Length: 220
Image (cartoon, rainbow, N blue to C red):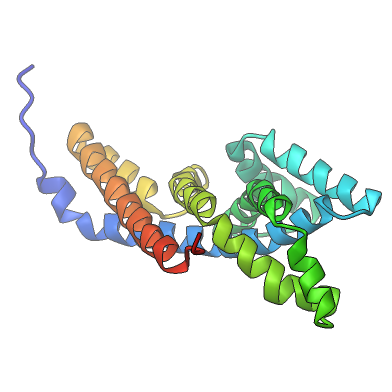
C-alpha cells in the first residue's frame, strides 16, 4: 500500500467545500418548495373527476419519473437554449430539480389524499365551507401531517441529487471536491471529507425532520 494520508490540501480549501455544501442545501430547499406546489396541483388533478386533468398529471408524472435526472439536467441546460429559453446553470438546475421533485411528490400527496377519511370533506360542507376552504384549511393540513415521513425522505434524496449539478459546473459541494481532487491529487482524502460532509448534512436534515414529525404528529 504505502499510501500516507495527508489532508493539508483539503483543509486549505475546506471553505470552498462548505460554501458548496451551503449552495447544495439552498438548491434542495428551493426545489422542494417549488416541487411541493407542483406536486399538490398534480395530486389534486390525479384524484379529480376530470379525465383531462387526470390524464395530463399522469403523463407528467410518468414522463419525469421514467427519465434519468441527469438527462433532464443536460436537456434543460444545453437543449432549452436551442428552443429559445436561455437559463444560466443555476436556474436550469433549479428548474430541473423542482420539476423532478414535483413528479415524485405528486405520488406522495396523492397517497395522502386517498388515505383521508371522506368524513372530513362532509364535515366541512356541513359547516358551510366552500371546496377551496375545505382544501386549504382541512384537507391539505391533515394530509401534509400524514405524509411528513415520505416528504422527509424526498428532501434527503433531493439534497443528494444536488451533486449532479456538478455536471453543468454549478459550484456545489461535488464540484469543489472534484476541483480540489484535480489540483491536489489527494483522491482518498478529498472524497473521504466530501462523503463525511454529505453524511453529516443528511443526518442533521433527518434529525430536524424527526423533530418536526414529533411536534406535528396527529394523536391516535
